[in-house]
Image (tube, rainbow, N blue to C red; front, side, top):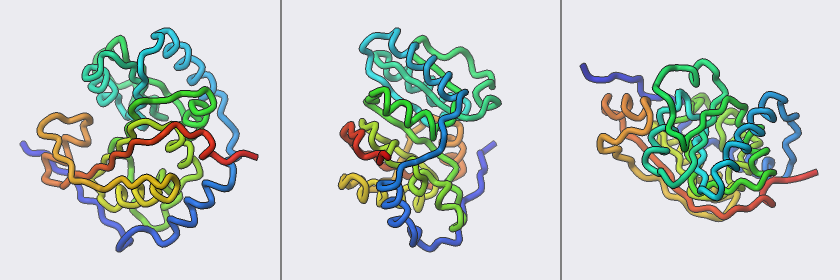
Length: 229
């Protein structure tokens, strides 16, 4: 049986008209959201685990869902440590087998986790955002990462940042926001997984005939991108 998934529809004809203003605001106004205690604790445990692996390069798998991508990235990069982060305890608890020894799944609020990682000096060599919920309504821009106040922290961590989605407009917006914030141009490209699926969503969208898109940017570690009081 072939997979079927609904194609994303939006009332936006193109990149959001308010995107540039929201990016500029994120770059100039500190994010004052208090750090949640549970994410502080989760980050402290993740930092201790990372430190226990010495100088192994770090891969960060943000919004990892059930953690299939974290497992597969760890298997593909045995010389690295891979940390997958998701806010849902339910998703992370689903049984997909024990992660490899070089992988860790963490339940945390990424808005806080990214800021803690930046403050702790984390420098991921790779940073993935795979098939995030695109929030397709025009009124939802502030819920997309490129329209969120935490956006500078995502970029400031540096490394090879890769975004994948089945909604081209989402990737186009992220690319525009990234270039505005950093000056780095990251073209939107068609993505063919060629049977090597990192997530269940990637498999489902591909097998249902939907085109997939990605954006890859090589970014410097740049803590100063995050505005401070």
